[in-house]
Image (cartoon, rainbow, N blue to C red; front, side):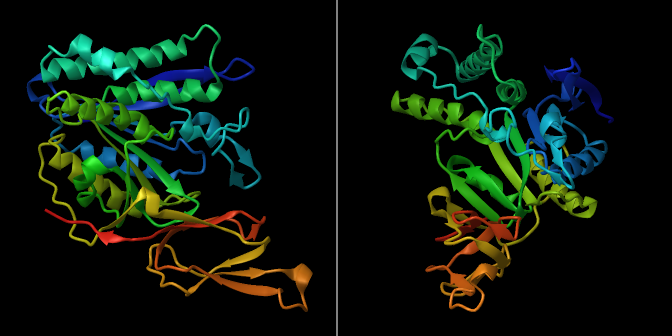
Length: 373
């Protein structure tokens, strides 16, 4: 089955050119539409291009599958960020107009749940879910129609968010600067981590921080918790994950096929495709988001990154060398820096020249092995 294609206009450039997104759809026939709906996007940050390769490899596999749930795929999800170049580098992590992170522009619904639930409590679970989904989509549409207008970044993000709100599974594909593969997964859905070919998982709470995964799952987690407080056992209806697929400014089709296979295993488990795709057997480790630590440069200088990402680092082992050419001939010309506790470095800053206070590494601490079923 080949996907159908469409496009969505998400803004206009100053000279009037339309900003559009390519969208691909796999849709089952009506008699086979038994699986959940899926939304997958990539490249919200301009330099994070590997997710496009994963979508490409995934679509090649899906063409051979018996599709049971509608799948919407949006590569190249931020045309402004992708084209935000300076010399050989892609800068598209922040909106150049406002300075906001492109992945922090989604709408925080902050629904008045006591009022909303009291008006809909007599609905069946399925009816309640559909009513809540409609409420979320309408809130996004109202944002787009705001009488005072909205920023370029909000317009892009909320259009993406509307598509995500139509799905039961949301996958947002990213990469780090210099990074190993890792996953952001909400605590209620931690079992999902065992299907993807990603060794490290950050377990995130029910707190909206502005990213797509939180924009997709937080309203549903909040609804589930509120319903339970009213004596109703309502499962969280939406799964939303952020996949960090190694380093930015990199495309590797062979590696993309590996990650596509992991996504297929998850979609198989969820009944989106009829085929059985078993997850790879591998050790997977996690830590809670509160234990994901940032290490900032104690001084400026030239950095030699010593700790490989994705490999455990014992307390006291070298993390970086800091070279200060302006201090040559003094005791401070070269310093080796280490951390006071065991950790796993997950990513590090891309540049070798840093200001004091630059975020050098992000590391997982209090790491535990994830269970398998």
